[in-house]
Amino acid sequence: MNIYVSNLSFAVIDEDLRSYFAEYGEVSSAKVITDKFTNRSKGFGFVEMPDDAAAEKAIAELDGATVDGRTIKVMVARPKEERPARPAHSNNRW
DNA sequence: GTTGAGCGTT
Image 1 (spheres, rainbow, N blue to C red):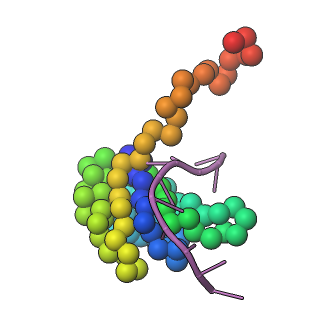
Image 2: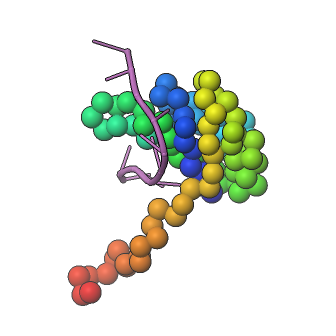
């Protein structure tokens, strides 16, 4: 389950995000999107949880929760690849 | 040391 988290404090890093969601279940991956040049947090991130039930619970519990003085927004992430998937292992025969 | 709507780098 991919989870999108926004309205995060700029001080929050990926391990913080992981610790938040780890309270509700196993977290396979957690990352706060940071600027590539300044390494500053963009204020949102993504969390991946293998257990969908735990993910839903984490979303329900963490959405609207106050973290670092800010009410964070947690929701299921949109499919990153909505564009037509092309076979990666095919030759350039398209 | 700053800022504030949003869907990411692998």
